[in-house]
Length: 362
Image 1 (cartoon, rainbow, N blue to C red):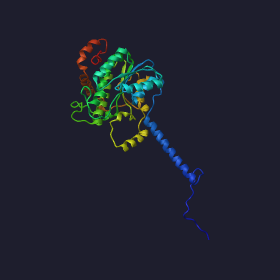
Image 2: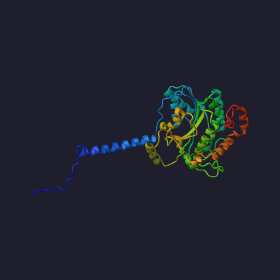
Image 3: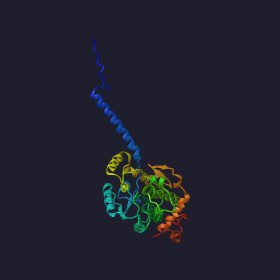
Image 4: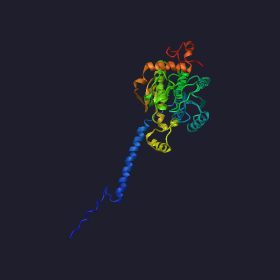
């Protein structure tokens, strides 16, 4: 009498393997596929890297907010390429530690620690006065420093802190350095903005967020929109001078810019793990800045917005000329440049007419 074993399971057969070995190979292949997908996703998120080998030996550079984060990575790469760099930071001790580290890694001794608090217009003027006593030209200005989503507070001059540091401090710094930038032409200005500008709005009745304050979607986004409007306005004023200015979004980067973010500890731990795959490294976050600062193919390009090293179109409110003109005039008044218009005009008879109203000699 024949018997059948109806409960017997068919043997697995993968690449000629059966039983436990077939299971092991299956798990291995699935793991390999997941790892490949994660690697490709990581490469996509990191974005392109600046690969050209051009050097900038002897070029004079200022980078703000560069003792940490993408600013430090920017200085590191520029130092490798031979630049003479003034590291403009609020904390001299942390800046000195970063300076020594970068010198050790690059063997470039031409790095200088200089105090600059963008929340103080007096500090900005003092920095510029010292720089001009040391240098007669400036080849590259990188407006990198910034703060994000912090509780409402005021700068030393009484302005809302995020708008004051991210926009007004850099506005004054750039204007006071324009004469040195023009002497070094062709020269460049790079402004680090953010995709957060998409949520920004220039409220002419409440520029300092006195009536209503929102840490990210209000004050921070407004300051980043101001960076872009400033860039576009300045680019038109600098036409024909040999000085270009462009702005950028560095991407979502693992930095301490989000130090004011508050959440449960378990969530922060989870976020730190997720960020390993879905957030850019500091080196990757600096790449768009480096392309705008270094790429010979961009010489003469000005007034544009970049992300992942590519030029991106702007939304209508980020290219509104009337708003840009109003913001420029209001920024002049707030930082104390407007009352110097006649004086600066008289001193710059040989300069382009469009620039005369914004340059103040020290």
